[in-house]
Image (cartoon, rainbow, N blue to C red):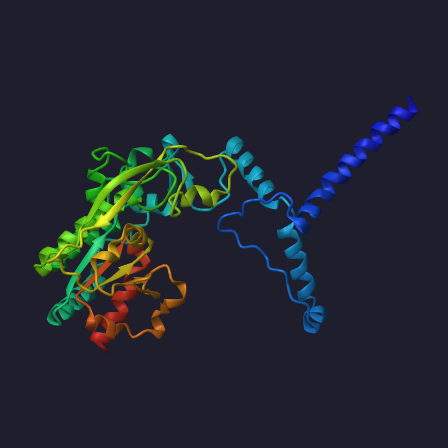
Length: 382
C-alpha cells in the first residue's frame, strides 16, 4: 500500500514537474508553435551592457522578456480571455463591445451615432469656415475639392447596438452639424454614412462585417465607385471604374476585416458569419482619364485602396490622419514620409483633386489637423 502510494505520488510529482518544465522547454525549442497575439506588444530580449547591469535595466528587461516569451503564453492568455468573456461577458480590450446578434462595435462609434460626444451647436462652425476658404483657394488653383463622410457601423447596424445603451439615434450629433453647416457654407460633400445606412439589407451581402470596424471590401467597392462618379462629374472626365468579376465566400477573414474580434484574442470566434470577397477589376479602356488625387483621412480609406481605388488615379497619395504620406505603392512602408518632413503644399499644387474623408468619430479630433495646417499656410496670421 505504501509502495503504491509512493508510486502514485511520484507519478503526480513527475506530471507536475513536466507541466511546469514543458513551457520552458517549448520556449527554447518551439516544439509546438503558438499563434501570436494580435496587437499586443511583446518585450524584446535585451542586449547586455555594463550600464544596464549596473542600473538594473538589463535585469528588468530580461525578466520582462522571460515572462512574455514563456512557452504557450499566447494560448494561456486566450484561454483566460475566453473564460472572462464566456462566463462574465468581459472583454479584455477597452473600447470593444458586443451587441445584439453577436455584432461587435467599437465604443466611440456608438457614442458618435448616439450623440454622446456632441460638442455643441456651434462646434464645427469655425473649422468649416476655414475649410470653405481652403476649398475656394484650391478651386482658384484649378483643383477639385470634396469633403466625404465615410460610413459607420453603428449607423449601419443600429438595431444591434447593445440594449443597455440609451440611444434613440435621432438626436443631435456632430455629423449632423457638420453636414448642415458645411452645406450652408457651400462646401462640396458626400455623406456616405447616411447612404450606407439606407442600403442596409438592400444589397446581396452586408457592407460591414459583424467582426470588424470598417466597411468591408464589398462595401468599399460601392464607396469607390460612387466617389469616382463624383470626381468624374466635377472634372467632366471619364475615369476607370471598378467592376465585380466574381464574389468569393470565406469563413476566414482577410485584410484585417475581423479587426475587433482579433483584438480580443479569444479561443473561439464570437460570430461565424461568412465573409464575402469581391474580385474587382478597373476598366482601363481607351478614353479614360486618371486624375491625380490626394486622399486625406483616417483608416476608412484603407479598404478603398485594397479595393484598388489607386488604379483610377495617376500618382495618387494618401495622407493618413495628415500625419503620414503614403504613395501609389501603398504597402511599401519604406516609401512613406512623415508630413512634417514632406512638401505637402507643393503636392497640393500638383494635384487635380483633394478628397478629405473621415468617419463620424474622426470629426471630433482628426479633421482639424489638415484644416488648421492648410489654413495657416494659405492665410498666415489670419
